[in-house]
Amino acid sequence: MSTILNTLFNLHNGEDDRQKTLESVKGNISFSGANLWILACAILVASVGLNVNSTAVIIGAMLISPLMGPIVASGFALGMYDFELLKKSLGNLLFATLVGLLVSSIYFFISPFKEVQSEILARTSPNIYDIL
Image 1: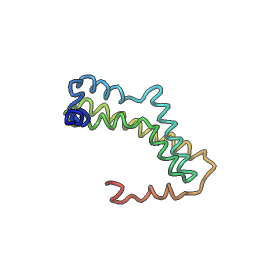
Image 2 (image 1 turned 90 degrees about the vertical axis):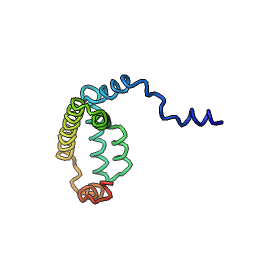
Image 3 (image 1 turned 30 degrees about the horizontal axis):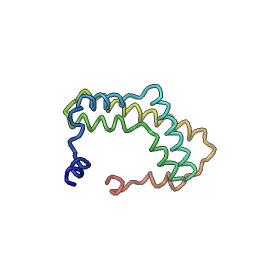
Image 4 (image 1 turned 135 degrees about the vertical axis):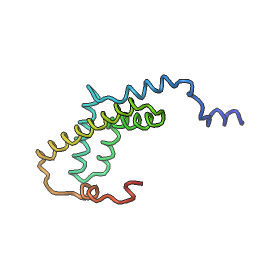
């Protein structure tokens, strides 16, 4: 029984694949090709969700967004003191932010919905719970 539990809850499985983990993290950083299009579509879906006041659509957009690659790489780089990886991941995160601002600005400029919904208003006044 204890060997089964030890196997199930062993946190050391996969530690030998450090190089493979590093390559996987580095491979998910860049925004080009399909990742860039998926990001633009996710931003478009989130903008529609904000316009029609749908929390479920906004959460769905977060699920399809490829932003976790640079975010995970930033944390990984800080943990390993790899400042080249940190610069690359933060640069790609900045690029993704600029793409997000551009796509959402274009969408809201041409959108027929001009009324401010509660989902948009809820995100304009952050509090301490949003940080937590």
